[in-house]
Length: 415
Image 1 (cartoon, one colour):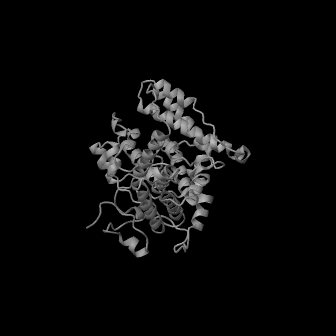
Image 2: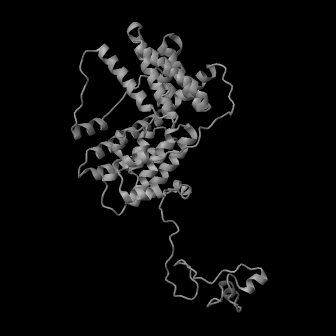
């Protein structure tokens, strides 16, 4: 069998070709690669001398980035899977899509494959030095260190044992792995259950507050370990304990808030919180970061408000808040606030903004090593994939990211 035309290798060498399949004899004899007989496609900007030059040039920088972001372009990829395509065709609503998602994450990293834990002193030191600073914005008056540690160490009640072991569990997981943290977590759950079932709070002063702290610390553990997934149960338990504390200290009814849009927006715009800091001089070097973080939360709350209460005039205001949010994000050396970052990511439409979000998530994972970063990134990429696949469809009802908090499963979560 012979080809109709010579191979491209012989044409390029300007010699005759015997047109044999699968490769011509000239190429085989001389050890050259036979480039075949099929059609060769060329880009429109590759001038080959046989056609009229169209003067069309491929863009060298299709995405216009800020100068400080250009070096990041090409390092991040948004991969679309067959599942994304199937869900796009079926028009599955985003909350159900997230619930169907198969989350697969790398195993927790360990600083030492065989840590030798003889007692909890090293874990307490690690919690005081690393963990407490990581989960609190203002470290000078850090309640996770100054309030929780005395409760965990000075009391002998079952709630105190639960809190102490919950702290051990968080430290052990972050420093080592989930296997080393499991005995501490199990013991914390067991003693918290003993304390609640035995109504220990009715017999001893201060126990209810310690039960509340233990529940919150177990919630923190669930945030660190993305495979654990019970953060909402611990959070609901902490809320129930807090309600009992409020009712026992005050007979006043629970405070209610107006649902009027303007009032809510005004409250967010003028919201102030004065931190009770003994020595303000200790945090002067952190003030810029603290203020930027607070502003980041405020802007995210405003974006959320404009989404859950739709209005024809909200689009321009929301766009303004999104731009402000990215300005604040760029001012932060390292973002430590997943919730406002998640809100901003859900509103990111341009490649420039998406690259910023992915780079920020990489930094968070590198510096914090908390499991919920994997979950948040997976949800964000799922949302972006569906937005891109249905970009030409005039129907945004499936992309109500602000309704995902009402899911029955355990995603997403933030700390």
